[in-house]
Length: 405
Image (cartoon, rainbow, N blue to C red; front, side, top):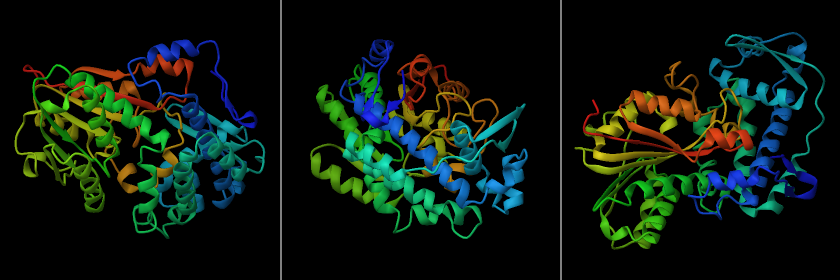
């Protein structure tokens, strides 16, 4: 499958496109539209051009006359050590433009300037993106806001978390975590479809949602449960979110939409034993989270806590932004990697070699380590990535069985 033909405002599909549709047949067909693929390609290109801008803003050009690693650049430019993750992403994106070359030696990478890049035209790309889908404005706005903070975060003058989740940033997140923003909403739809599939045979439903934000994922899950006639089985739906403002937004919206459902709201810290908070005992048929679990300080700990919250036969379903291949940079990282909550995590060479987004293989290995049985990633992203390497969405599912440790 070819990249978006930006000048023609069209995403060109190759002869393998019918295979892609076949892999996605269990999901609502309107979600995986040409507009989605066009938008993803546009965002990928936009983030690469933002990286070109940052090359100059961070004064990296003069340091890249010879081979430099990200660590060396951090020292030479007097950047904060924690900025290394973001710097590695910038360098990897610049390799895609051809202006940098990379030398790989085992786990280490060094970069050198090959040629000066062309001047980016972000305004033109934004116009194209809004012509594809006006809902793309939310992603453009958040990408721009995050990029504007990079120089000050790199030198320690500002903190990414305080700025992006402060009064200035909150409206941007509210627009981004919204089902009108298709490039984000696709995560909600994929996760909800996988969760609803696993709940279909349950006579009663008790659901725990983790990190629900303002409720966009909850909204889609409830919609699909209603569509499949499963809402009458719902006995309890505990919706957790640590951010008090997001939690209040969630409660106001969903309580009004579903006044007769047994919905509850509470805070929950992923990184503290759940049974010391609102999760007093096991018994949930579904533990559900969309784009949350990858920020756990200790991923194995949080997965184990989720398993303990399940009843026997219950399922953990995580809708996650997936990295198709190891070390592949992807556009959503631009918004998140200057956040300490995203980057300051415990890594593990087996299943979490890097902070942030993981591959399907890494998620399955993590589920196995957490004694979650029958681990599966839906759709088949390993097959899809061979057709379309910018497919970033999947649901990781695993079951608690009677034999689990």
